[in-house]
Image (cartoon, rainbow, N blue to C red; front, side, top):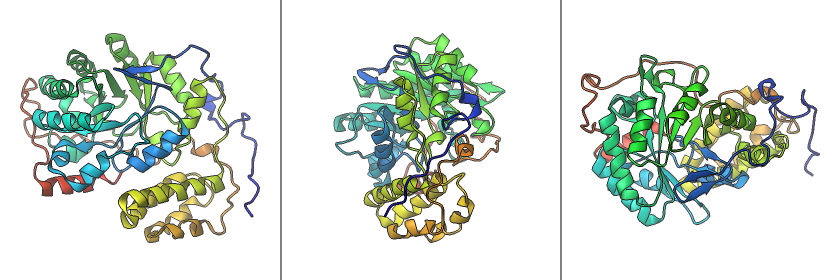
Length: 409
């Protein structure tokens, strides 16, 4: 017999942090659907593309909790065109996924154009390009968040995508800049608008910050005030109420949710509620979350096969249980988690009726608090007007190694 769900009072009568305790739900007509070309997205919420995270199984779970737009992890254009198994798998979809949204990654305009044409022929509904990845392996080759340093190169890449996308909307995701001495977001937004991009997503941190500190929402407001196309805000959306605060403060047209939903896919149900003017229900208790984990494991194993699916599930268990009593002890057994039936026994002797810990609402789950010195190619800053495409992974062997290195999440 399933135990009775445990409920318990939170300090404010609902599971919300102090910073959001007095934030009201949206009032009728306060926000509009996000318009991306022919797409109308409600609520105006996008699941951020995250390597090793936003594969089809996780997108499906998030979509079932609430409407919006759910991006794939970034797919290497060259790998996709060469038929690399993992690239093709990660770009795949199923009939239930609508609208279908894919983030592409590439440094060659020709490759990007060919990939976009192929995806449009498959029926993709939205395309995004990654100009924000701060991973050293990416920036060292002049890609990711390094691209906006060279506006003419950025323009070439976007022009190829937009030209080949036809009526399918193209968006850009980028960061404030390389560091506080090299800020690029205003110029990057202008270039994107001039090349016909449908919206710009801005993470309010520099590449050197990685995921440390507090996201700068002011820069999102500044970019919104300077452009005619929609601007999407990204950074520190830990609770549904943060999305309302960001949009009210900055005037942005939508929000991008990244780390805040790791191990918390029900955040999208809460987002749908507050945008519709409703107070969300409390998060699930641990027993319910274990059920969500079992469903997630089944989907991962069905998509990747059990060996790879359960390897991926190890990090998800750590994220789902973050903040619960005894969660640190659970992690010691994760390296032996190889089969689906091993999942529930991890929780033997644990109080499954524990309700979601309020302290876990704003705790990072995937990235640390460190900063970095951004690695760029030798001489990269000597001629910022140069539009020569940088060299990315080119051969199948390079692409396979590249994809494996990015799957850590």
